Length: 313
Image (cartoon, rainbow, N blue to C red; front, side, top):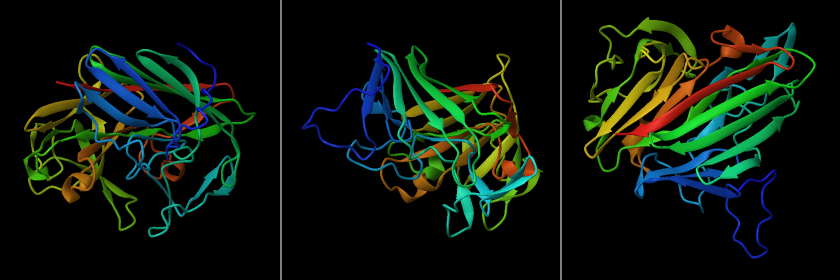
C-alpha cells in the first residue's frame, strides 16, 4: 500500500497524543512510527521490545524515539550567529537556558509512503522566530532481516545557505537488568566534558577515564549523559555501539554521516516507564551552531542524508 498523505481517521477512532500511528513489519520485527515528530514509538522482535518506547495512549517523554532537527542537543541561550546575522531561538530548556533538540519533534509529519515493511514520513520546516530557512525533511523506517534501518534526508529548498544538524533519540531496551549490570561498548575515542548547563567545555581522550567503553564492559558506577567522537569504524565504514543485558544484546550502527554519538543512562537508573539506554547517532555535538563543530551548511538545493539502524543479536 502507498499513500501521498495521511489517511483520514475514522470518525469515532480514538485520538492518540502522538497522532496517527503507522505500523510496519518484516519477519519477527514490527515497528510503529507516529505523526507527531515523525518518531519511532515502538520496535519489537517476536513481541519483545528492542527499543524502550511508550504506549499509544501516552505522550512521548524523555525524547523517546524522536528526531532532532535542525540541531540535536542544546544551543547556548538559544542564540547563534549565521551568515553575519544573530538569531534568537525560543529557550525550551528553561532551567539551563538552552534551546533544546531542534524544531520538529512536536511538529505534525505527513505520511509520504507506506508499504508492508517500510514507512516514509516528511515535513517542511518553514521560517519562524530564530530560524530563517526552508528545509524539506524526509525519513524512511525500513525493516529487513537485520532489524531496523533509518534513512533521513534534509534538502535546502530556500534561497540561501542553511545550518543543519541531525540526531535521533532511541532508547535500547534492557528489560529487567539493573543499570550497573548492563554491558556497553561505545566506539568513541574522545568524550565531551560539559559544564553545569550540559554544554561542551572540553574534549578529552577516553584513555584512563571512566567513560572508556571501547572494549565492552559493565556500566558499574558510571553514569552517562555523554557525547563521543573520534569514533572507531568497522571495515564497512560503520561504527557500532552495543547494549548488552542479561537476556539480549542490541547494536546501534551508523554510517559516515554520523561522526558523533551520545549515550544517556538516567532512564535506566530511575526505572521510570519502559527502561532503556539512549544511544543517539548525531551529525554534530551540542552547540554546533556556535562552535561550528560538525555543522553542516546546506547550499540552496543541496541535500544531506544519513543512515543508521538497530540490530538485535
